[in-house]
Structures are given as C-alpha cells and as structure tokens.
Length: 413
Ligand SMILES: [Zn+2]
Image 1 (cartoon, rainbow, N blue to C red):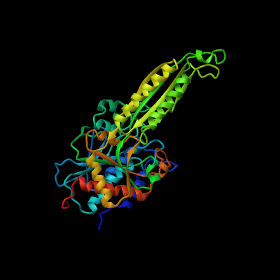
Image 2: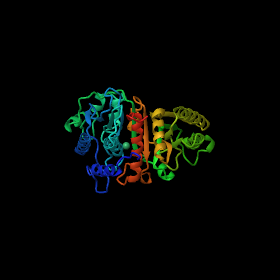
Image 3: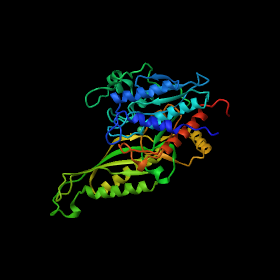
Image 4: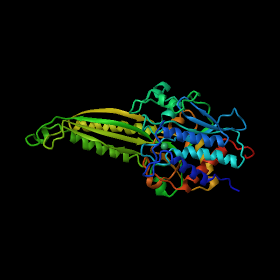
C-alpha cells in the first residue's frame, strides 16, 4: 500500500482557517498580529497539540510545533510558512504551507511512523509585510537579517508596534529568536504565477529565487523651446532615454528565458508638450536567478546608459534603490524532493520562484528548498485566489515523502 496524506482533512482545515477573517468577496483579511491572526494561531496550536506536538514560541512570535523523533537530540526537519494575509488576501497564500506541514504530522501519526529526526511545523510571523513593513520579518530576525529590537519597534499606521502587539495577543514567546541546528527546511506554497497551470503540472520543484535590483536612471538635459531650437543644438534627454531602454531590453533578451527587465515608471519634467524636457527619471527593475548573470546585467546596463548619455550630450546619474540577492536552494534538499516525485510518479517541472518567501531567509541558516503547486490563473494576493484540492493534496504528498526521507523513517532504508 502506498502511504498517502489525507487530502480531505487538509482541505477542511484550510476552509476552517479561511473562516477567520473571511471577507464578503470570499478572501481573507488576517493581517499580522491582529485579533484574527491570534485566532488563526490559536487554532493551529490547538490542532498541533491534539496531534501530540510540543509547542515553542520565540521572541518574534514564530511558532514551532514539534513531533518527536527517536533521537531527541537530532536536528529537526522543519516545514512551514505563514498564517498572516494581505488586507484583501486569499485562502491559500502561506496558510497552505503551514497546514500541509501539520498534515504531514497527522499522517505520520495515522501511519504510526517513527522518524529518527524530530519534525516541526512552523508558523513565521508577518511574512506579508502588509501591516508591518518590511515583509518576512519573523524569518528575517530568526536568520539574523534584522535585529530583534529593530523588528519589535516597527510600527503600523496606528503607531502600534510589533513588540506591543505580540504581547497583546500573547505570542511574545520565551524562546530566543535565533537559529538552531536544522537538518532540512521545506516550504510548500501556491505558485502565485501562471507557469504550472500553463504547463498542466501539479507540482513544481523550486530550485531557487530570482535576484532583483532596482534603480532610478536620472537623465538631465536642458529645456528649450520646441520650435525655434534646431535639433542639433539641443540637449534632449529623450534621445538618450529611448536608446537606453532599447539596449536594456536587448541585454535582457540576450540572457533569456530567465531574465527580466521592467520600466514601470517614467517621470518627464517639467512635462510640457512644446518644451524639450529638463529631466527624465526612469525606474528600472532587473531580475535573474543567477547572481553572476544579474551582476553582468547591471554592469552592461551602466555601460550602455553612460554611452547613450554621452552620445546625446546629456548628464546621467544612476541611483541604486534596492538589491536582493538570488538564492539557489540546497542540492540535497532538492534531491530529496526529486526522489519523492519519482516514487509518487508525480508529473512536475523544475522552476524558479519569482516572488520572495520565508525560505529566502531560512536558506541562510539551514539547507532549504521549496515545492510549488498551481493556483488558478496565477492569481494571488487577491480574494479570488483559488487552488485545486487535488493539487494541494499532490504537493503535500510530495512534502510527506520528502520528510520521510530527510527525517529518516525508522525501519525503511
Ligand atoms: Zn506567502
């Protein structure tokens, strides 16, 4: 008999959790550290306790529900995501990853399976960054990306801080928020994009997360009258702008299919139809899953911008707004997932995540990888977010087999 998780229990728990903060349009509003978030956390802890777990809460409110292993000193395998949502969020983003991990615990119990390593289902605090910015703050402090004091002092629009809200809802835990030895960390998540659905695959093995870099390219010319000034006597920033955009598209397409370039905002000043612009500010967002390639893209972007500015006889400045490194997930973790899809005969593809997740930070302190399942029409951060129960079951079965492997199921080699 093949071991399987209980897809119906998983689905009914997803629907129970979705009741908390349910919106009229069928979504969820369960923002971090609100009363709704507290009720969601309480429900998770109740289920985990009923499944025999021991629960720890750390100083950032991250929750760890542990199913014991044969060797209590062995480093645990962990899996989880987040329970907080966007203000008009869906039922699956984050929640699925938490409840899939809990379902693995239930299934280990159902099948009376003992593992060498403990297994923990994890809830990370404030992944969304909707009420408290930045995003992924619970996993970020855990992994040393942010200081605890800095995180506790972050305030929402009503000046309520993470620290005070944690204690108000009773999730300012005793455990220090620092990394401990972890055997492996897995996160299952809806894709939040259209690729799996388009390829008709229930499972994506996520090998890494795109790196991204944001810039403002500021081009200065001189504003002159559109009529009397001959073309060759102008310092026109638009002459540089269109060439720069064109050449950034070119250098991006040269590195396809994984490269991205987006110019989401162009501000022309003073913005008058019969005056050559004084200044143009161009926002640039470039992405690639390989850090070296992304570095090369930035270098080439700078080169072409300088060349074209010189050519058009205008001034140029490039401001760095934000850089987020590309993440390559751990090969051993990926191999455990690959073995699981093989054993299960699960159709799948390997892919890169276009969005950030708690696993980006966790991967700094533990061997980490992710599993994606499709979401309807790629829609997420939206009340219409939807997923097929069969896909959610498939992804959780892959997680189950992966945990059997990496937590070392006793009696099976
Ligand atoms: Zn999420």
